[in-house]
Image (cartoon, rainbow, N blue to C red; front, side, top):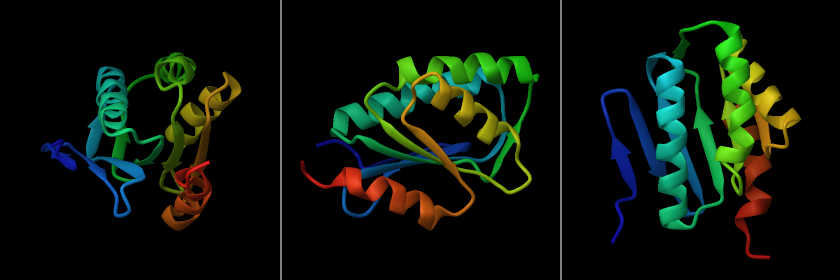
Length: 131
């Protein structure tokens, strides 16, 4: 049986109640390498559990690195995370996560950014029901 959560000093990756949405929460500084590693973690976690909806809680992230890295990273998200519907929750004063999400969306990603967790979950919810 697969574990329903992974806890690390810097992040938590878990299946939310109901079993249809995975939640990723990063705490502290985050580099481009961290983001790339996290994509692989999240994709593997979701695929192993057959979860198609992902809530990325980035409210406690502290972006490190130039804007060009964020653009390049956002460009890779649609291909790397193909098949996942991704809601990104960020702080009101955070410009990095919405920028990455916009780049990903413009490259065909199934993404949306939010300031409110409840709104993000509402956006994901229709995709948690069987077709």
